Image (cartoon, rainbow, N blue to C red; front, side, top):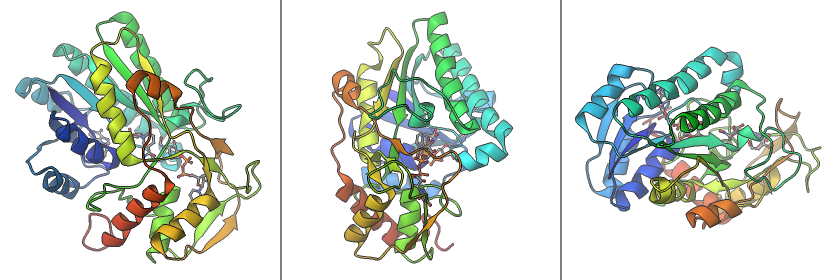
Length: 339
Ligand code: NAD
Ligand code: WQD
């Protein structure tokens, strides 16, 4: 089976590509490199010991996409391509709607034209907004507090409408919680451009000495130590969820919406402590005001994923921190030679 992986050069896409190839799939990566480096694919090729078909193109460009479907017989698409920085989405909402929503429309139109109607979509726990309680189940009310989150919500709705209009589509919406960690080879990992928005890369860059100190955004939340609680999930576990989703995708009669999380919530300070232990480095921090739009607690009820996919997270916090640290310390500037 041939899988088109949009955004396959990015953080989650590159890790998923490894497991897809190991599971025997042929993979075609399609990426515009707006937030990735070709080096990530070279390193994936080394890990899997084979060349990977890589096509540089933009999902908003019909001609780029049609060329791929003309030249290859694609059985299913895993759709990672998208912009993901919450703060930037507030400043540039149209850019986010264009890239994420319009891009997905062009992708689905092209898929339909070539009669490829199986898609796994990268959604996010952000579609739960500020949940009334935790753990979060898939049927909780949905809302969004920023254009990035709204783009995910709209795409989910769009894909549901698509299925209503034509039930030969096979659609899986995977709602990721907080992906962290790296492949055990420490040759690929998360490589944010500029100052990281997310906690784990910020902690890792602080431990390696690239940042002086971590700002902990708020210590007065209603959580066990006052700092925000999240469901951190190892990126290889997340990657495995995609392989498992492909196993069932052709048998679906309904759109499947599935949480991918561990079911365990850790606070910011829990993460700092665990990272210090794994790296044997100090992570200096100071308490800063709350970040606008943040919520106190967010963690998954992953029961449905186990039931429907036979998937559950295998890697714990220690391994997440160890693997993030190994990637960060071996590649202090990510995929670049120097910063
Ligand atoms: P990433 O930025 O590392 O990967 C996204 C990839 O898509 C990049 O390689 C980028 O170059 C590519 N891309 C972006 N726009 C494109 C376009 N128009 N055409 C072609 N390629 C394009 O991000 P990631 O962390 O790997 O996330 C993958 C997906 O998962 C995204 O859709 C993201 O919104 C979603 N997601 C991520 C997280 C997270 O915290 N990392 C959480 C939930 C959901
Ligand atoms: C985690 C915790 C922060 C940075 C975001 C997106 C979400 C999803 C995942 C894509 C929070 C605290 C953070 C720092 C801190 N992405 N923090 N200092 O906010 O749960 O989710 O990424 O879909 O849509 O919103 O993740 O890693 O930014 O924050 O104290 O420098 O760490 O306040 O409690 P978040 P995060």
